Image (tube, one colour):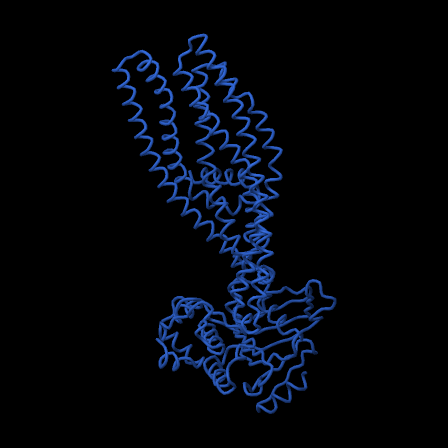
Length: 583
């Protein structure tokens, strides 16, 4: 049963969204197949009940009204009421079930897309705008879910009503039924011709929407900079062209939707008019029961409505394929990092570069060329050099944000390219200059690194980061609220809280990448000394420009673009002299 469900889910996902989408969407569809079956059963039952009223109306008119039979009138009226009430109740149940399961499915699709986005390689994140990612996670994921859930229900329900309506038309009069469906091939040919343009317009609208969302997200994130420059109005004025572009694309799309909807409606009106004229003449000249004509016209709605639904799904699929392609850029197997890899080797944080060469895409010259370096486990290292000297690139190689074009990067003797990427980044923890905090509490932010950490663990990390006294005296301790972008914290406090969070990770290598740049020198020195005392056996790498001598002594000084010369000594003055020589 499980394998059958998996095959059905895969077939469903591939048929609706294409072969590429089957791999990541099929597991979600598989989970909801029983729910889809339940909703479908209720929906088809309601549709079956809906087939009866037109025929019962015919009987009420012909056998009750025309025949002037009061008993038949009451009988068929009661039957119509009972079936209508049952259809109403089934429709309500179907609506509630549909909402319940489709909302859950949307949550799962969005969660899967977010998980894949968070697992993108770091270099992929750098090239994607936040607003564009948000548009894909929200709008595109919603459209994929809606089509995945509704296509089966709407499609099968439409087929059921279409077949049922066609059968009833044939029962009433097969000749008139042929008149009703005569223009269907023309309608199908038109919509097939129009579909490619529908897809192009959907792509244009989503691109415009993504650009606008990115602009808004960047504007809010950079509000402080805009106020500093007095550029609020300048930035606001730049919104107008983006909005105009989106509105224009939406108008073009809507105009095309009116055309693609209007042509079938026009053809349907021609068919309905033909049925009215021919059927009316039969009633006048041949005595065809008027109830049959009324029922026939009602069943034409059963025929035309489902046909419109199926053709609408055909065009909706063109639009949703655009959404799928955009989501595939987030969840595609060729982009997301693998969950697998070798376990971390035994060791204490020995780092080595062996003849490493790395050149950024589009750059003329390599940042590192045939460089070799060894950093012993437990060493305290100063990574020094001016901007552009390769410090960030070197750190990126250690955590696999970049892969070298030649050579190897080793952690405790194992090539980092073979290791589980998540385990690697928890072994080589980098604290960036901008310590990002999330909305919640101080404890929430700290436990991102260690969900099972006790309060005592959190306080120890805060003491090392020189934040414990401040949080106790002036705030609410671990329950101190951290608002959006941590605007209630100074830059130095954000950096120190980010350091405390990193200390809770079971790291082998700790990298402070300019992460004390907004902390006063005396406090920065205390923090580094406390880290040295708490983790004397861990490898510590400090990236600093000014005031590095106050953070020593160092066992090693490294300048990436230089010959990777190293220096050793005990006194701070010796460390400063070694750094100057390395530069």
